[in-house]
Amino acid sequence: MTDQRDAPPQRRYSRRSILQRASVGAGIAALGTTESLASARTALASPPEKQAAPDGFGRIFKLPAFAKSSPAVVDALLEIGRPGGVLDASDALERGPVDLIVDPALSANNPNNPTSTAGATFVGQFMDHDLTFDPVSRLGIRPGPDAKNFRTPAFDLDSVYGRGPIADLHLYEPADGAKLKLESGGLFEDLPRSADGRAIIADPRNDENLILSGLHSAFLCFHNRGVDYLRARGVIDPVELYLRARRLTTWHYQWLILHEFLPQFVGKALVDLILARGRRFYTVRRDAFMPVEFQAAAFRFGHSLVRPSYRANLAGDRGKPFFGFVFDVAEAAKPDPGDMSGGVRAPRRFIGWQTFFDFGDGEVKPNKRVDTKISTPLFNLPGGVIPGLPGLHRGPTALAQRNFLRHLTWELPSGQRIAKEMGAPMLSRSDLQELGGLGVGFDRQTPLWYYVLKEAEIVADGLHLGPVGGRIVAEVIIGLLKSDPGSYLAVEPRWRPSLPSRVGGGDFRMTDFLTFAGVDPASRGQ
Image (tube, rainbow, N blue to C red):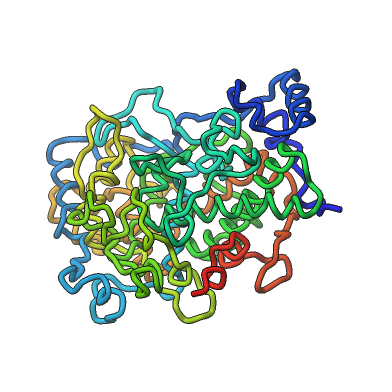
């Protein structure tokens, strides 16, 4: 007898909807048995259901832009975000990736966050890729009215599952229509790759760095283990297996967002307040949209969390730990680069998750704080990380400069104007005095991303976001979960995770997710 908490939902992930979302063709045979084919054909004869689709970007606040675009404003934005500028943490890269982790003196200008582990950064990046994809707008140039978000504004893992096992058959295991493709990198799991090394995944951005590709691989493992888990409980039909394993994965992921990662990002008190009293500003119910204040500014706070270097694993480099800078352009195009860049398969390029999440063995490393210090490697991004289609303007290689130019693209309001609209405490000009000398009034009307970082630094000591940034991030994430008709908050608000956990009581943490996926330290023998 199966656990009814794992029964397929009646809304988004019904058998009919998953088949109708896909482009139906020859790939239908991959679903397996004659019985499942008959079921699929019956479902396909039914009237279509309304589906969530890629949508336009929107705004929470109808406020004027922080500044009008001009050569002086552009120059000021580029100055703030330049290598060696006010945001650059000036990490001692010459000391190497190991010392930047183990020598506390080297963190004085780029302090660690004792309340957040290194893996939360990449969960945030994974969440962002699940929500938003803007491959065509140009930096610093206002987009047209038809600008689109190429991801669904929902935590539905479309970045992992694509359009399902019919339309995106190449993502799925041909010998088992319910499972996703997964390959080996030599020692441990890796993303499936083509002959030239490109990842065969629904969102190529999830191969931008080694930690993110490892996280995507962990989701593939989790889903596939979910298929095995359900088979052992009597579920046989491949369509049913796929749908239920997808829901099992998606709902546990949504639980982690709401109960583990969002409280780290904004503070548990704010999460509890919004859940109890509701949202004040992002007030959508069913027709969710992706707010540019979130996408282009507030949720980019995660860039401040990135460390200059990481320990990828404890024993992958010929029995020794594999350390590397997060990015190092000198390592580009090498067959086995020494940094954390993605897009390459080699035996040492796997993630030992005890570095990134706390398994209680003393090996976990912290994030950096949310503040106005960005790790130095992010001021010289390798070409493979910079988005943009061939022929489109790609812009500067400093991540901070790119973030600032997006404020002009989307004509974002200033942090001060949003604080006033919210009734939140406003930073003073003296709080932002480093911007006063630029001559364009940024100490009075501050670009939202910078304001969010400075607010967190001053109000919350960099441990999490402050009142403006936190409110935007929390309301949008909670709003997207509540407005998604397939989420556990919409379908079964009292649902609790059904899989094993260390603490029990229906709670579930990222360490439990990785353990169920079979990628935890114990499974690796580390």
